[in-house]
Image 1 (cartoon, one colour):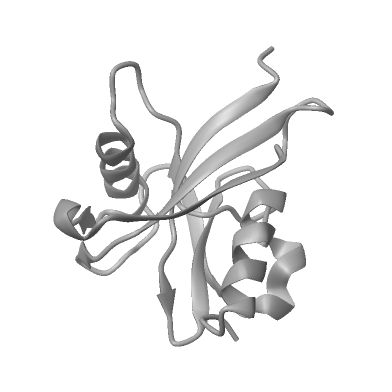
Image 2 (cartoon, one colour):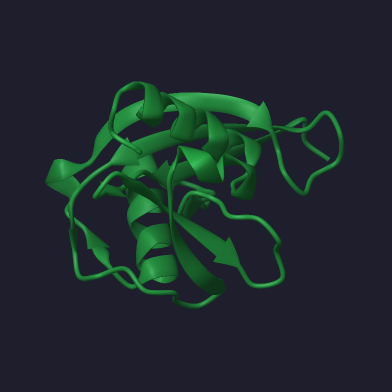
Length: 133
């Protein structure tokens, strides 16, 4: 088992709330995104994952790195970390649960216990920056 999970996430804030997703069979929310397939760039993987999860198309020319976060990986053995590169960007279409996604949620800082540890770090940063309520 690897000691870390390499992940990508899309950070979208609307009306002071952060978009999060819950995968079928999971009890906690995550930022939308996932892992890259062999040979994929961050942009290719993120665009694919967001299309699969939310049925929207990211506009590649608008995708920008927000930051990189490291935290305990939820649902993995103790000691496993997730290294998550987070990107912002505009999309075409309205996000909706697709494929393995059971539901969407729009979270505020008061909801930090509903999101996985890496997502909490992002939520905290967005709150401190005044972007999330």
